[in-house]
Length: 359
Image (tube, rainbow, N blue to C red; front, side, top):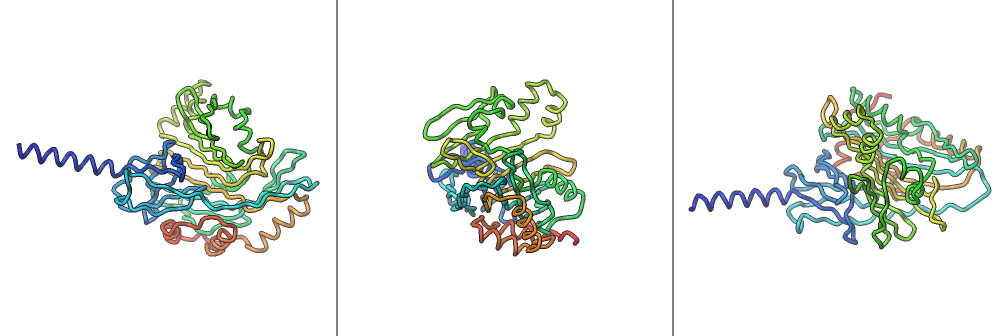
């Protein structure tokens, strides 16, 4: 009997240990926060929270760092948590509204950060400023050169080359032609991904496809947070359209793509490129070098109505100020000046360990 008690006690301790490794992240209103990056104190990636704000396994870490594009970063002592739940505070990030003027371009300057992890270890970091202009008449985005101002901290091996090409193709910090308001209004994006919106009250909408929930849209004081499991949306679309080869490839690689976007709505409930506040994109898949994770954070730092000459002047000013590359200190000073959250100490240390890109 004593042996049985010891076995039961051991099982109970094991169960408690497993339970303690489950982390649930919520905001100050108790709502789940999706797409929170959870890292070790050394800056290694553990994972991200699900649509329910949960990460199931902290891999034995006693303290973890939580980061999210719209919330203040937080260092968490896992053993001190009640029921494995932790609250993150909204980011105190204010972006001045633009004054409407009869000029052809909407200027949206963005500050971006790119992180690449291989097998949870940081392998690549890139950050800088992207000057964008949206031509209202031609409905076309004009962007400054990707290399006008960027961080100089990256590996030069095959992983970095792959990530660099991917980041450059994506144009880190480049604005989209239309804001997420089109999605909120049930535009073409809805039909394209076979999703429906369900109003749950209190400014919250559930986004679903025939296989279940794929995200949420929450509105408060004309600021909208949209989080979507785009990987599930894309793979269902592949299935619905009979794209079997692409679907199989994504399933075999355990492909995952999620994004979070924060934007403002105007008095009519619409949004445009001028209303971007911040966004975060997160990709994961199994590659030939292990599990790959790729994150882009984008923050709008300036909105204005300008003309073509003013846009050229802004691009030249950035290029003159920062030459071809910004130092890590310059990047951090710029972020601080614009109210952008600082790098967590763990990520800062991980970045400093990376070899510098040759000039």
